[in-house]
Length: 380
Image (cartoon, rainbow, N blue to C red):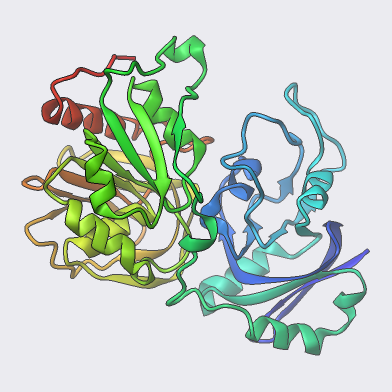
């Protein structure tokens, strides 16, 4: 069936529909990863975003039960150059088109994605509407629909993706690599704030023998402190970090009490709690191949990113320091405050798929917890 992507500036990209029918709106973004579309679709950080994949051939590995990063597809739409007509992978349990239809997500194939990405890079990310079926015929209406969509600047989307109730996480990674590392009751407790957390982040923590309790994004600092954690983790998530004011206030109250480690949105919220500033990027970083320089070691890590906001390089971090830079544009990719025992990175060290260059960050967090909590964590 006919499908179309319409941008708020009036640019139209026709294609063929797959997945669900109807109309959906969101911010149009692009991801440069070569694979991993299932992880991307289920990452809560993509809530209210229409994702364009720059890799031309998508869907050939199908869908499996192991790779989702959450319990649902969060993307507002999915745009590809070519949808694979066949599926070939030993873990396959279904095809991409059926998966999107099951989750009521619109997909569009046959789109000139190279032209689309060039347009986004030139004009910046913008609101868009995607339509599959009869609604795709009314371009004028779709253009206005795109212009009426939510603007990411100033949008607190964390409230829409965070867990409603706290829960304990026990799942680990492949036992062939990590063995039986389920945390004992005496292992250090980590409280993980769920701003839109990915499952593999949690596995990276339990792999290292930590007890993990995930709490809603709005959990007051006093409640977290009352659990006597050895450390606090700040997760990734969608939207404008400056709009999540309760999270900034809670982390500000927890600074100095326990070690804190943040990833992506958690990195931005930590920076804001330290007195820094965040800003909207022109088109953001999304993909598994971003070069990041560790300023302490001088080494370059190939990292996975997914963010449309960044910590301003001019931020006053209250005694903190910048530790990592993205080499594509010199944006802040990591920070640390030694006295307050807090650190964070803009990228995803847990990323799957992706390189494992940055897994040391989880080990550094464990070391900080050991120094804070006399009860040792089991090694891998």
